[in-house]
Length: 143
Image (tube, rainbow, N blue to C red):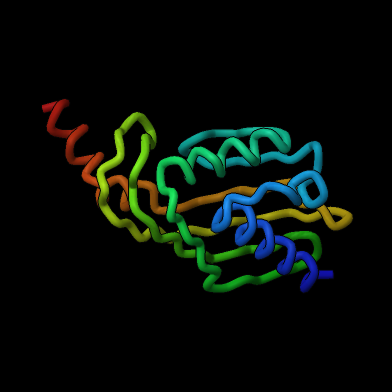
């Protein structure tokens, strides 16, 4: 079971995030899906799953998530990942900068009956914004 759950999380990251292919979402993501992450808060449903990934793909069209490590127990999978890409479009109110980025994070997923039903994600948001020069610009305006 745990190996199947790890494979499902990897498949969704590869297909949806890396390739922008959402064709398997209805099959592999539960209708009651919940996403929690401090930057965007809580989002619910398959549409939220698609919208969040589309937001990041629009901002970073060449985004590539690489799974560095996974640990699974019961219905939970913890995935440590690294994302790379180029900031080309609007992200958190900031226009594309053309800057490359590398961000590390962790995703705690819950899989029930072969469907992803929950993700809780933490990633280095501050580091990402610093790489893009967004934090620096915001701090300069506040001064």
